[in-house]
Amino acid sequence: MTKQNEQKPHHHGDLSEALIEAGISLLNEGGVDALTLRKCAARAGVSHAAPAHHFKGLKGLMTAIITRGFLLFADEMNVNIAAAHDDPKSRLHGCCIGYLKFSRENSALASIIFDKTNCYNDDEKWNTAADSAYQVLIDICAPFNHPYGDAEITQIAVWTMLEGYVNFERKGVINNSDRNRKPLDINLLIDMLKLEIAG
Amino acid sequence: MTKQNEQKPHHHGDLSEALIEAGISLLNEGGVDALTLRKCAARAGVSHAAPAHHFKGLKGLMTAIITRGFLLFADEMNVNIAAAHDDPKSRLHGCCIGYLKFSRENSALASIIFDKTNCYNDDEKWNTAADSAYQVLIDICAPFNHPYGDAEITQIAVWTMLEGYVNFERKGVINNSDRNRKPLDINLLIDMLKLEIAG
DNA sequence: AAGATTAGCTTGACAGTGTCAATTTTAATA
DNA sequence: TATTAAAATTGACACTGTCAAGCTAATCTT
Image (cartoon, rainbow over all chains, first blue to last red; front, side, top):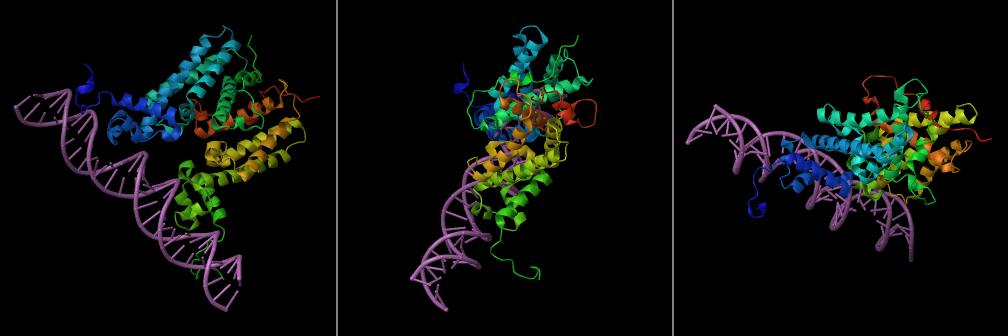
């Protein structure tokens, strides 16, 4: 019934998918440095050069991993937005909770996701996935006034504040302070932004 | 007169310094990936294993490079603060200009500077240098009201917004938007923070 | 001043890494 | 069934960081 007693087939079946999952596991277990082409191959049970037939080198595999990451990221935000009260501020808060949650629970993945130099950014799936995440932000910012007449400024303000904070948290800077305190409520930061509901 | 006709001496003279400078040059020229122990050694004119006698591996050299980086970083902020009008908001703006300038002109160095995992963070000089940079921020935020009764929240808000923005800029995310626009004025973002002079 | 000590550096090796070329194995096709 | 294409393997190469052993030259001790 199982493959237990069968010979290992020459063809893997779905090596692309196996490599992506191996990569994400390696990221979770050992951080960014643990993500290597050879280890992904080994974990998928194939030889070190097999991935080359599915991805254009390490960068190609990373493109696929990051694509997956963007989908998980957008999901996490959407789930937390859906769980929030249905007013703009609450929805924004939910979005931020989701952002922070994703960053904390997928630390290594989150650390590579926003670096375009890790990707072939002409990749179609990557573009679609990245846009789907960015669209969450655009939608969540839309109800607010744009003090400088440009919606993008508001988006960037929220986006950068979130990204700056999770970066510091991830890199161990925030806990650099002499006193030890509990993790910051991200919405304390967000509420420092001049955001008012348009009306 | 010059060393041109002399034999290369066995002892370098000041290899530590030469390695740090080689490292910074490599970062500027080829980004983070270009920073390798062996290339630093080659550029300093010594064998590949020579650095081990001055630094505890690559991480040790990076600790020294980042230490240098923090000093340059603090300097750049201080210069721009000094050039600003002598009121809290102008000084804050000057600080941000310096932050952004440092990040743009030392892109690779800036990208590794805030990652504690790159360093031996029990290093004394590193701690001193990092604190000197952080102190600039503390001082610049001191004149403002702290809406949540904690000065650190204000500092983190400014810090994260800056770091988030320069990160996006560096990683090529910000220019991801469909329209091409001129670089953002960082103080447009900073002015979106609820900061009022304490009185 | 002469010998002993040690700091500074070199050489050589090792296990990883990504990537390429050549080859073998299997599946699909005609 | 014979041919072709796809999938995966093997082996090599140039890098990387790190370690061990040895050599060179400056410093220290007496």
